[in-house]
Length: 425
Image 1 (tube, rainbow, N blue to C red):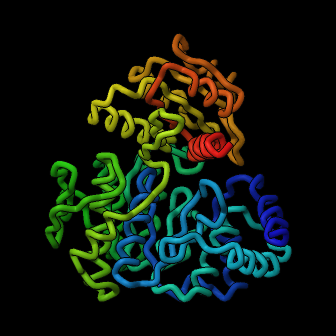
Image 2 (image 1 turned 135 degrees about the vertical axis):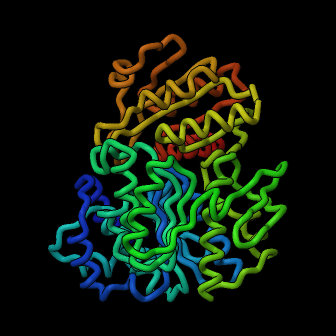
Image 3 (image 1 turned 180 degrees about the vertical axis):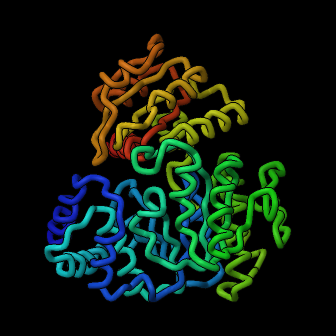
């Protein structure tokens, strides 16, 4: 669609305006759109890691329980349409074009960032589609995030770790405060597994706002039982087969089911154990501990883009005890210049015989080869590549049968796209 491409090109010009936290720009834009975010129920999800997976679980549950559900997440892996899902499907090119036309006309000369524009577009599309409920994932932080103009039925804070420290602060407490600001007065909040000092900041805000707080391990939890999970909350649900792999998904599962209980108590959706289990069996969230074969080799894709994510990937690999994965291909972004990107390598490198580190195309600032070389103290097993295609070509002719691709979401998606392209030739 030539017309759609011209509008996507217009939107992409805002990608390089950088990150500019604040709500005043999007408030003006949403007012011109007649505040579409107020025309349906919402769930708001923040967290350093786990918010995408938790969002996907809740989306699947709401859809299986016969609600018309919208899901807004970021970034997208391959196409912008992925950010705006209706009933588990990305919106069509036609609906995206219709929304972009309205967005461009409404914006006029107002200033805006790329994320503010996509957030306004999501709110508008969900209103046009007349969704019953929209699950809204925070972009970064919470307090000044463009999504923080909704009054959700329930908020979820999945985890607190170090990321985006230039904008969110350099301590766990400061980061927790930013994310706790998605809590709205007298609206419940689900608090995932996190350090005590982060939890306390969130509880303090919830108390000030008279908002009920539901805590991991106090009010709800999940227990692994072989290949299944048991949920213990207001209800007990046994034999949950979760389609998303990784031990940490148990924490996200607990948060999603606690939020489902809250929505059920409010009469927004029914509590139907069999339907909920069915929904979780078919939930999909791509490139998160995803295993796939290409050219006879076992690839594992995981978007472990910060320390917390790298530690989770490490624990998963050790817990599985699969010594087949001996090559790591890694790429990272460092948008604000504060990310300790070398820690991704340090946390994972002893599990692998070789590590390929790449630069790659991205709208975000990519960590360069020279920056990696400067920060890594031990480069004995490392090879550097100017682009992921070169690294993948070498990996495919290497003796390694198991290959892990990790780091930035943009990097992992780019590698997946390249491998699919090679396969199609």
